Length: 228
Image (tube, rainbow, N blue to C red; front, side):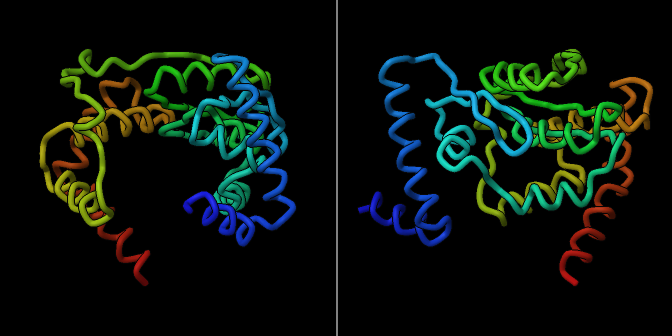
């Protein structure tokens, strides 16, 4: 029943021809998975190429079926990004947006792409190399900066209201793993924007902005603007 429901939803949102092509691509995925448990499929996505994992049920699956995703985000990036920009991409996954961003900012731009999942990271590197992007790889070990390690469940989000409450508590000074991950990500953003000289300085600056209330004030201003 769910299969038929998804079929009609796809026809409504993507169109009949796109749905037929997706069905054909779905059977290709099945065949590839039957004969191999490790092969990747190379596809052209927009104006770049990607290796996609036919065993994945997330980004790779969508791109293999339809050849595109989240076109509204693509339009926003095309309007916002300029040549030679510096970008901080949190959760780079397998490179769908990183490759798009790379084309938009050009050879003299810079992207810091953060990806914590080892399998995604390896495919991200393959996709960057496939498109002749220069890679400078580095690993951030939270324990080096005094943070305790945690598991994914401890960082798992929930409903929008629950996530909003956690974010508000964080900016009001609550300690914990949520704050730690924000500090680590913010420090990287400060480094790429040349706001600080070292990663440690970036962590210190992020702590200051939370503790002195400036981060909370910025969040409140953002909420006010988005509600106008």
